[in-house]
Amino acid sequence: MSREQLAVQQARKAFLTGRSKSLDYRIKQLKNLSRFIKERAADITNALRKDLYKSANSTQLFEILGLEGEINLAVSKLAEWAAPRPVNKNLLTISDDVFLQPEPLGVVLIIGAWNYPIAVTLQPLVGAIAAGNAVVVKPSEVSSHTASVMELMSLYLDSEMYQVVTGGVPETQELLKQRFDHIFYTGNSTVGKLVMEAASHHLTPVTLELGGKSPCYIDKNCDIRIACRRITWGKYLNCGQTCIAPDYILCESSIQDRVIDEIQKCIKEFYTIDPKTFEDYGRIINRRHFKRIMALLEGSTVAIGGDCDESECYIAPTVLRDVKPASKVMQEEIFGPILPIVTVNGLKEAIEFINDREKPLALYVFSSSKKVIKQMISETSSGALLANDCMVHFTLSDLPFGGVGYSGTGRYHGKYSFDQVSHLRSCLIKKLNMEAVNQMRYPPHTTEKLRWARVLLLKQINVTRWRQMAQVAVLAALAAFVVKRFLR
Ligand code: NAD
Image (tube, rainbow, N blue to C red):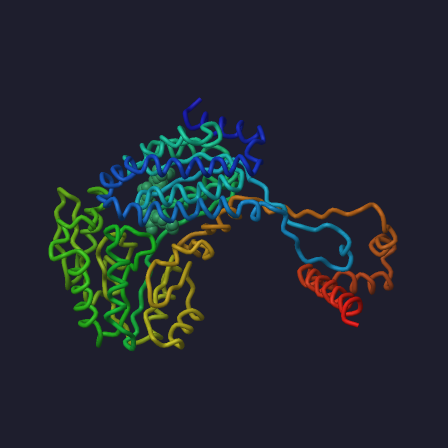
């Protein structure tokens, strides 16, 4: 039996003991995960420095803080999330107990990516633990140092229920042959298709957190200086290796020079005149990606940056001007510190440009006009839309994170993570009395019964509203009693 098979078998065995059904158990595991990231903070920091040249503080800011927030939220809200959820009823079921009961799916496979290896691997884990699943975690082999640190999780978590399998593509492929109850994959869409194909053999549902080219439209009537500050931050953070980084800028040619000028100032302000020696400017993950990114420059005009050092996997913050839609850099997700500017004739053309391509993971629009923002919302589609900022939607647990179409399927963060790896079981509990009401559904199906069925089935009862009305009635009765008893 392979190591991968064994891991899945052990996880399933642990799941079948039923111990992860207890909310106390799940909370304990979540707290243990929290302890892991605190006690192993130095190991995590060192690993991310080695893998991506991340500074200690940026690791805290962009990998750990969000994860901590997700754990704390899950711990404080678990009882609420896991509780039965009442639903609206019709007149036929008015006296029944009708609710959704969240239940764990079983064994969940989480396949992580390398760019934020802690965040994109362990945030789905929080949801999977909270929902009561057993989990097999497969960290990305590309960020190998961080993957090794994640192996230490077994010292903190129930190591039968939560397995960590490290390794490369063959190990991932072996895992994908196994039967899971959900697969949560983060990475590129080519592998996303393989994951979906493998999952289909067992009819396993998938969450695919993919990427793509996230456009950024700058309206000429906006504060270009502020827009460029926010875009510069979003683009060059983690050396452009962020799934929701603005991939390219769309703007009118009349503002292109100003945009370049402002971005240049920001690069200097954020990363000094020599980003290579600045501690908060990262590196490309490996030479393969370095070569891929540098090749994207072919045929385009460099306006800022463009210098590189292969021995260090360093690519300077780079801007390309007057980029042609057919150019190499516009054919794939860049995932590196290169920012092409494509000029368009206004909003309408920008929208057409966006709609001619796959639906992006994020879409950014910078404008001081509400009309422009509204038009962008109503005439395009994307996983998320942000106006006048980049990427900060990631910080809100109440905003589901995920793509649409080619940028992914499914969503997570906060309660959405919990729901994503839960089955919301429909429950209806009837009593064995009031049989007379059921006459309506038994043969013979007369016109009279059909008339009654219309009334009983089509009238929706809003449980919350009924509850509110009942509360108002009780309060009114109480008030009437007080008036009658004491104020006469
Ligand atoms: P990667 O190379 O680490 O691959 C991800 C996982 O897929 C790894 O665990 C790897 O073992 C596995 N894998 C790779 N090739 C495989 C194969 N042939 N068969 C089976 N498994 C295989 O990561 P990546 O794909 O380079 O990550 C970058 C991409 O991920 C970008 O497109 C980025 O936009 C996207 N991403 C998306 C999100 C999101 O939340 N939507 C987050 C981070 C990254």
